Length: 415
Image (cartoon, rainbow, N blue to C red; front, top):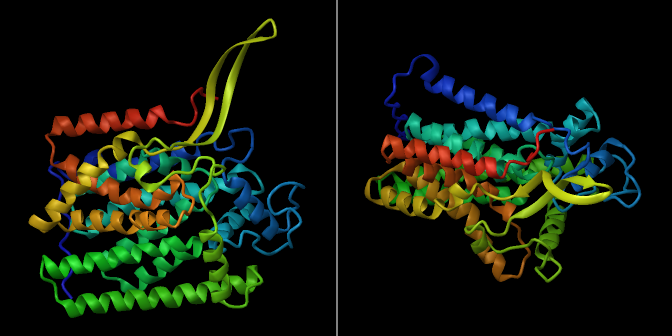
């Protein structure tokens, strides 16, 4: 079994504050601090879909849920949010048991997983044979993508899927097939669409066989080993979780509930901020997660309103607008230059984004945050494109990218 080539070194000396490890550590530290900043805002209230998952965790812990709120009156100790497997809610539940029923308890797992996803993005690039420069830029682009940022500090399930998927990809590229399957199963035990990344593994192996001329039998063996580990870990995991936290007696029963619920969500005039996957590329279907205005009054009359807090489901505009060009270039480099990192980026986005086009044909309701699992692939492709730019252009792009992040930063008026 031929391992992937090691990552190429940065042009800068790997010493002092400019070493790869130190720069990555500083990026992770800044990212963590930005995510934990004002974590109890807005005023201890839930944001977006937090009221579903926080209340589900309250029910598991036996904490009373207010009348009229989701899952009020549900049996204590059980996961009331049965349209998804229990694992994501249990991560929130464990944090609430440790830190209390408060914003820190609700959101700390998202911060930890969201920060870990940044480091794992760099790890995926290196494991695929990319340079340290590309690894750092890809991590930077994920760190300062607004959609990833918001979901890294709210108590929803999507960031858990993102991080487990990155862990699965890292393990697979390192040829740790059993670990890759287990990590992929963990992603699926949060949301079943976490299993879609298996399509990226299959596409990547097909690429390796076609272009770099890897041994087909070895590729099949890796896929079979990973698939077997995924099926075993997912099936056993769902069975155990259901035994303790739901009333389903078999994983099949729970999966029927999950798929039946998902396919029953149809787009309509009442679907609110729903959108289609082709809309996401234009970043014009932004979702208001939470909005609070600061009101200025004179003699009891409102004279001005200024957005004080605005959590918005939206990608960094300088990622999504570059992504189509970057992915097209990555496809070209993967085919002509046998660039494995570029192939990883293309396969990743194809596996985690294109299936939504098939779902759109069924009339299934969708939202822009569904694209979150595809963001690492876009970030890697954009990093490869930026790496090939002159240094001045590269730094200019990163500066503009930070401007895009600041323009959507949730706290418009500092508390």
